[in-house]
Image 1 (cartoon, rainbow, N blue to C red):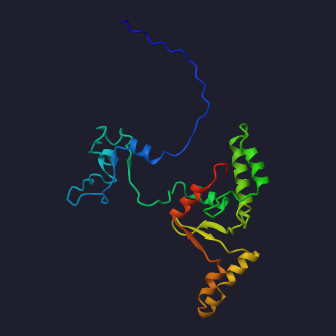
Image 2: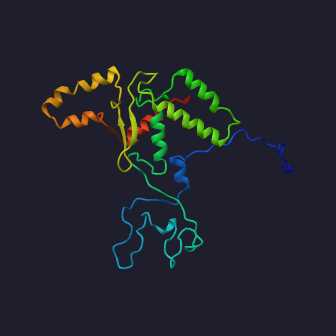
Amino acid sequence: MVKEQYRETDLARKICKVSFGVDGPHQMQQQAHLHVVAKNLYSQDATRTPVPFGVLDRRMGTNQKDANCQSCSKGLNDCVGHYGYIDLELPVFHIGYFRSVINILQTICKNPLCAHVLLNDKERMSYYTKVRNPNLSYLARKALRKQIQDRAKKVSICPHCGDINGTIKKCGLLKISHEKFRTRRPENVMAAKLAEYDEVVSYNAELESARKHGLTQILNPQEVLRLLQAIPEQD
């Protein structure tokens, strides 16, 4: 049987799109050289060698001039480093995306059953049409994103589910607070909610300061992840 010669029939290919995003857990594991499980940095000996399967394991590179990487056998100046991964039992905030997470939370409804952008349907479709314009420059898109965020931050009642939305801001180290009932001009629903604490304050006057600050709620990473996953695809 004669072996046929391979001929590629279509040399020209059209790229329809290029997608940018963050690698998923499976992709991170595929790229990694090591599963980090040890909590200690160095061994408890006089040489202070990095603990195997720790964050300084030499299979991910070396931080010493007299040692080589155990993956590529290159020195400190030549080794570019290799990935390792840690399995997290619970979600945590990534410091590199923390500001972006706050910006998104300021724009959406904090009701996990809703999570729509805090704009009515007319405004949402208007901004959606502008954002989909392929001829927009980077600066124009950035300004439009800022405009959407500023408009949504002023909305205290979600136009989709009617839930109350307060101020989202950073508080402390990698913590996010939601001051749901704090506003200069409280709505009837907010005033009624704050009035529920009148009897409690009458027995403990120290709680009055907490009520004045709008009954701040701390959003943990699990709650934030649930909100981000609940954002509708069209938003």
